[in-house]
Image (cartoon, rainbow, N blue to C red; front, side):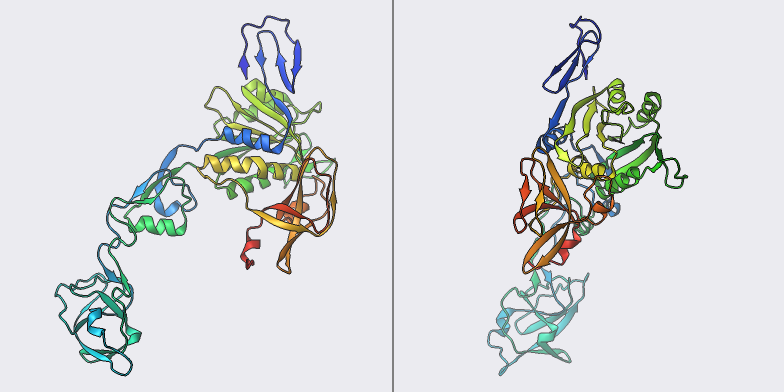
Length: 447
C-alpha cells in the first residue's frame, strides 16, 4: 500500500478499477487484483520471494539445507594414486604372459596398509601386498584383487593379465585442489555432507530457514483439548500448516486463535511481524466478521491479490508489508482442505525459494483417469486422488467426498489432479497430470 498526497477528493470516495480498489483523499490507496488464475497467482508470489540471507552452521547439522556459498577443494582428492581394492600392487607388464595355463609368480617384497606408505620402488618381478585406500608404491601401475591371486609365503601366483591401471584410483580422480566441489543452491544430502567432511569442512554457509507465524481466526474455534460444544470447531489448520512448513524445512510458531474482532486480530498479527512469512487461516472472505484483509491493510500490508480462480481455495489473499523489511503474507481460507491445497500451490513454493531452493514444484505424473470427472468452466480444480499401477500405467481415482471441509480427502490423497479452468469434462480413460504428494509411490515404480 502507498499514500497519495495529491488526491484531495472527499474521504471515502471509492472507485473500482479492474478489480483494484482506490480510496481517494489523503488515505492509503490499495491496488489489488481479484479473481486471477492459478498461474498468475503463482508468478506473483514467487516474484516476491528471494532467498534468505546465509548463516554458518555445523556441517553435521546441515542435512537438507541449501548451500549459500561455493565450496572449493583445498587439496587434491585422492592426494595420490591409491588402491581401490585389497590385493597386490605390481607392474602390469610383469603379467603380460600370465594365463590359467601358465600363471606368473611374483615376489611379495613388503606390505602397504591404508594410511601407510610404500617408499621403495618395485622392481620387475616384484609385488607389494596392498589394502584399499593405500597409496600405490613407486613403480606399480596396477592392482590385482586378492581373490584373483594365490599367496604362497612371500610369493604370489597370478593367472590373469590385467590392464594397466586396473583397481587404481588416480590422484585427483574426484577433485583437484582449487576445483569447485559444490555450487550454491545445492540441497545438502548425506553424500554432500560426506564430501564436505572429506574436504575438512566442519562449518558451512547455508540459507537461513524461513520462520513462519501461523494465526487462526474465528469465534467458533477452540484448541483440540477444549470442550467441543455449541457449534465449536477445533482449530486444526494450525497443526496441519505447521506440519507442511516443517516438511519444507521451515520453522513455524503459533500465534494462537484470534476472535472475530479487529482489535484482537491486530494484536496477534503484530506478534507475527518478525517472521519471514505470516499465514492466517479463515476470516479472509467477504462476510461481516471477516476482518483479516482490512486489519492487514491497516498494519501496512499491501495486498497483491485476493481471489484465485481455483477450487478448493478461491478466497486467498497475498501481500507484503511495505516498505520492507516485513513478512510476506498469505491469508488462507478457513476450510481445512482449501488451506492445505492453497499451501501446496503457493506457500510451499515460496518457502522453498526463501530457503534457497531452485526447484519449487512437486513432481508431475501423467495418469489415466479411472472415472469421468465433470465441472463448470471458470476455475481450476485440484482433485484429491489415489493412484494405482496397472498394466504399465498409473490410474487416478478421486479419494472420496471432494468437499473443502472433508479433511479425509487430503489424508487419502497421493496426488492432486489438475483439472484445467476452462475444461468441463475429463473422460474416463483420458490422461491428466497429477501433482505427486506421496513420493513413496515412486519407490515401487519400475519404469
